[in-house]
Length: 167
Image (cartoon, rainbow, N blue to C red; front, side, top):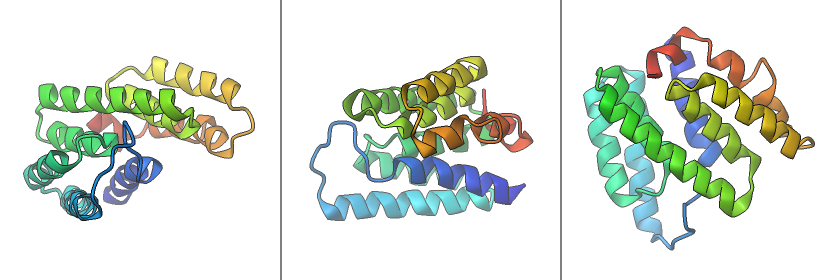
């Protein structure tokens, strides 16, 4: 169970790593510090120290509030502590940032991330519809094909680990 949870968290971060909402210039030292804090938070999540993960993500977000992956991890940490309102706010912020990224670059990975966050918000049907639309809009994209495949994100949405994180 912890392994799948770790994979979910890592997938969220990996798909969007290095992207920013408005391509703002962030000094390398700030990027590095924020990434280190986020990494520590992911580890805290894996060892079930959710309040520590939340605190680390809040510190990371003070440095990089343009990183939707960080907002997702914050939401997950809050959800694990039964703070559903806080989780909802974090997930919604992540969804907005992913939508903005897609508008800017039309990268199919951003659609997959939006679908992931929609499902976390309990909007699974919308998530599947977005994946299907993404596959129509980007039919030759291997990442989109993999994510939209019934064995991809739709299968992930049905796991107990995912259900424990969604609202």
